[in-house]
Length: 437
Image 1 (cartoon, rainbow, N blue to C red):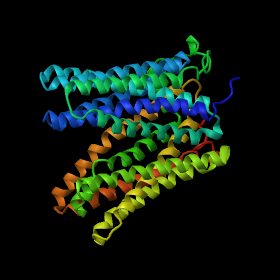
Image 2: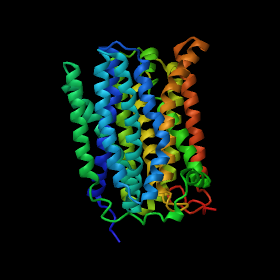
Image 3: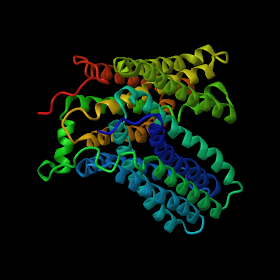
């Protein structure tokens, strides 16, 4: 029997998340900016293209099912990364082409973002399943935080270095930088995953008689009460989390009169708080080892409730006026987000092997799809809710306060749902699944 991965092995798998994040952030930030600013295209266009990427995440259960039936995760990780890397290059080429030939460029862009969605889903789902399978239970909480932090590091490095290389802008430079990022990301992912799974499957491949059709396999997983509750929890919590993205900076500007640079710095402070929350979960998880399973539910519920409390404070902040400590509130919100997200990911890794056998990939895919759909809906829903509330109430601070209260209530609902998961069972993450029927 193979020994569980040590810290070096966990860091190696984290390189895959770094690589994945590097390609994705370039397509959602730099290409977005080029389309809207340099090419003067409608802001809706990049929104629709990114929406295609999120829509394809609905196929995560299918990719997880495919790795379940084959018995190996590495081919799905590397294959998904290859599709993602090629999609990233094609997305840059499509953006450059739109300046000269819009319709052909748009067609290529749709194809590119389809590939990005497929690649992220295939690689990301199997990576988390492999991580759960090869990491000892005592280290899973820390491992979950580490790989997520490494993905954020990929965001930061790519935007910082890529931003410098893209000045001054030219279509050729855009494609060259994107191609360079994709090549480096593919090399990192290959170095990270190669040999981790071992020469033999992580478990025996399913026998022909044990290979049900995909719809039946997904129905079997959805029939597991704990897996279903956890799916709903992920959707609600990530919906509340993502709904903040497009409204916090405008809130700081509209209500508190912060400049663009000042509101961007506040967003950076929030992201810093998220990293601190994730690191906190990693440190506590490492210190308590296997006993941390008993605290994991408390971290998840507590993080959601803490984030809800900060949202309510932000809703009341206009009453305080200019003296309100907006920076501290943004840091606190990030901290709550980071704690609950890291704890939820760790629980995801602990619970993925529970329930009916040989459904780990399908189960993880279902949870990943819930997260991606919530992210796709959340940002748009938050921004649209502010617009509707502003039309209804007129005053911007009342509109934002209304949306903040709704967001807080969604966080509370997610916490209540998390409290129900496995509450009558011994702790194993959130608790063991009920036996499959």
